[in-house]
Image (cartoon, rainbow, N blue to C red; front, side, top):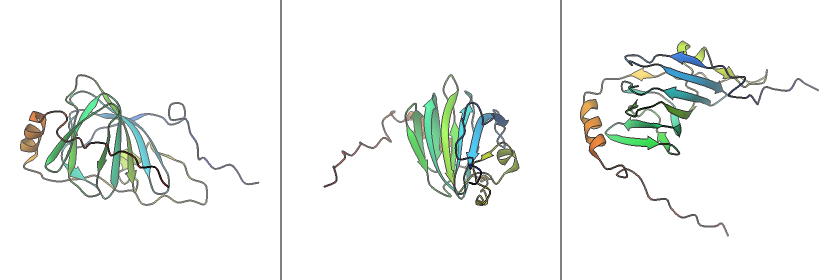
Length: 175
C-alpha cells in the first residue's frame, strides 16, 4: 500500500499562520493558506483600516466573511460584506478591499487557479498534494491604476446597506 496522501490538515493546528503586507497597504494580512492542484484557500484576518490598492489577477475568487465586515469593490461597484456573506470576484476584474469597521475581518478566500504566484504568498502555503500531483502555476496580483477609486468608494459607502443585495431565489425541488 502506498503512503497516505496529505489530503487533510487541521487549519488551526497544522497550517501555520504568517503575515504579508500588500503593496501600498498600511496594514498587514495575517493568514493561513493551503493549495491543491487547481485551487488555493486562505483564512485571512485584516485589521480595521486595512485598505488595498486596485489590482487584478487571472483567478476567480470567492470570499466568505467569517467575522467582522469588509468593503469589497469590483470595478465601479462597492459591496459591504458582513459575517455570513459570500462574495465572488470574477477573473481579471479590477478589485480592492477596505476594512472600515472597528475590528478585524476574518475571511475565507478561494482562488482558482491558485493565488500562489508571488513568493510572499507562496512561502507559507501548505501543499495538499500527493507525490504524483503537481499544482498549477500560481497567479499573481497585478497592481493597476484606477483613477476613479475614491469616487467609487464614496458613492458605494453612501448607498443603503441592502442596495446591492439580490433577493434569494427560492429553490425548486428536482423532479
